[in-house]
Length: 48
Image 1 (spheres, rainbow, N blue to C red):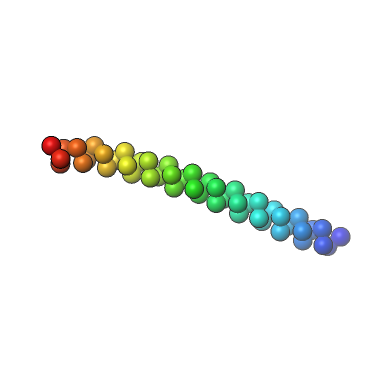
Image 2: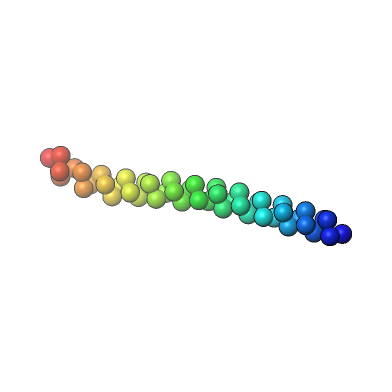
C-alpha cells in the first residue's frame, strides 16, 4: 500500500514539475514579447 502512495506522490511531483516548466516557457515567451514591444518604439526615434 505504501508503495502505491509513494508512486502516486512521485508521479504527482513529476506532473507538477513538467506543468510548471511549460508554464515558465510561456511566461518567458510572453515577457520577451513585452520587452520587444517596449524596445521597438524607443528604437524608432533614435534611428530617425
